[in-house]
Image 1 (cartoon, each protein chain N blue to C red):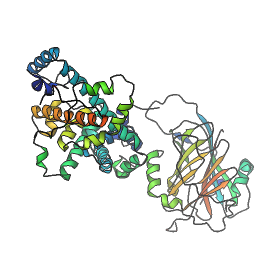
Image 2 (spheres, rainbow over the protein chains, first blue to last red; image 1 turned 30 degrees about the vertical axis):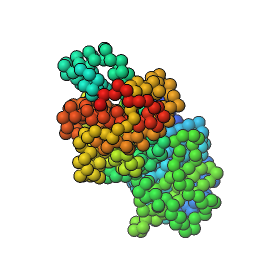
Image 3 (cartoon, each protein chain N blue to C red; image 1 turned 180 degrees about the vertical axis):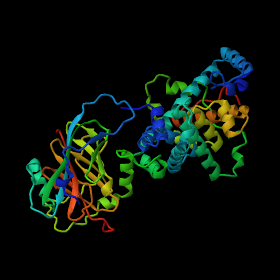
Image 4 (tube, rainbow over the protein chains, first blue to last red; image 1 turned 90 degrees about the horizontal axis):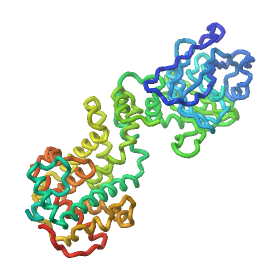
Length: 147
Length: 161
Length: 202
């Protein structure tokens, strides 16, 4: 799998997929989504931009991390956000609902044929593997509500 | 026209009787108090039949009903390929592969601080529960619970790709 | 944020399973109530109800926007329930004939409505009788019960009933009359309302 460095990903394009109905106005939830690559090989560590993830990522067997892209979106319920992965695949993140106590996201990752529905408290971060491991590396997205 | 003749006309709705029947009924009701009372009985009966049947429905647990209907509709019946973000597709897939979410195939050398698999639905009423549902077609998913939040991993493809 | 039925139907027609699921959830209980009234058995009513929604799905493209979705699905439910009844008892032709019913103690006219009250407040008696409705309905012959439920729950007109059940309009009216009369007698019996059958047309 190509290393993130060669992909020249500065900003990942986010596509707001169309919704057919005019939804009543709701306060959008600021969500930060980052695309990461984790590898078993290479020098263990995280780049400065991922320092906040270091603790969480250390729970996995992937030692070396790179960021490949980032999306900051104001998400409304049921309006999917598509996040492109290097290599042409994409991941869809949808806010199901958000309340003061928690937010629920659905993440659809066809590349790994995986779907998840996760409810987290504000400030918690979801880290989801979105491609199967190949050559010791895999792609992940992280989702954190509240920016 | 006596009560016996008028009786089947009771309980009719506007427009259901032809003009002759309508005339007969009006004429009879204007002079027959018991038949007016019978008409009131029909109203009462109608309400109690409806109440009774709806009450039965209210007492029954319907939480599995919609699932049962949806499961019997093939996924291909929904027009087009599952669109990204079509939540129904996600739920249907989850149900078909629920068992995979409970697989605990450990990825070798995984340094897991804590390994939990949360299986459960976010309840529709009451406070939200913190939980994770994961489904994967052929990659055993795994959830790690960390203090910063959950990590969802997938295992290796069964076909080795 | 509840979308109207017609919007959900449009989306379901467009292939949106979530819209269809929402329609199911919205109408499931009322559909079940109709099915239960006709087939009597709760498990059978459950199956009939699910089958009704499946048929709705199969025929979504035929739904005409003029009528309400609710009406449409009730009609379908009634049809499925009647089909099931016919399959269960294909040869009970004796149900068809309007033979005189065994004599029941008929309540005097107006007793039921007086007892149940006409104000919107639920009286204790009404609640009690509601709870016994399936029991009472179960005591009616299939055809009487069917026609009563279709009339009271689905709101079918005499003409629609005649068409649906393939009987003349006159038969619809007299069968409804007998069904109601028997129900009233049963309910009066449950309620302990005793009155001689005075002035009762028979």
